[in-house]
Figure 1 (tube, rainbow, N blue to C red):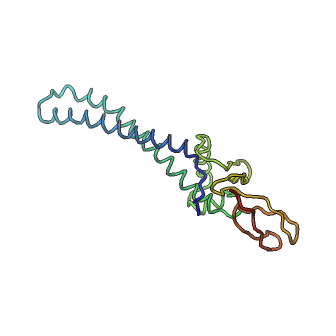
Figure 2: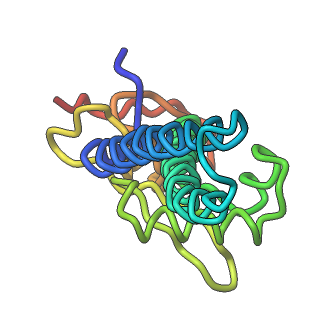
Length: 184
């Protein structure tokens, strides 16, 4: 079975490559200027150069910081995607996220808002306001990972229930088993 993912591979790949590039360039810059520190410490370079060398290392440290934040963004998105994939009804409430992550829901939704703004998630939406939650969108024909949900009508009682595509579930009202149709 293919693992469900709610991560936009193009966006997450771009962010991750950018992060790795920033880390590599930052390391190279700081390694180059670190050699100047060694030259100053061994007396091959005048101590007057300490301030300029430190000033030249600041952009390298900034690139390292930015790169680590970009890589951390992808790690956070993967963590949330796993939580979204395990959800049973397609609606992940603030309380469910709070239990899963062991963080205050207010902090979680600030983090999620930043991730959604970057376009890192697909097939789900962030709903804020009085009842903040993440809603997994309905399955579409051709939904490769069967990541979405379908609105199904119970054959026994006629109630409407959301069930993940390519799976079976129980009616929320009478408990009858309902089979969602197979998606390609």
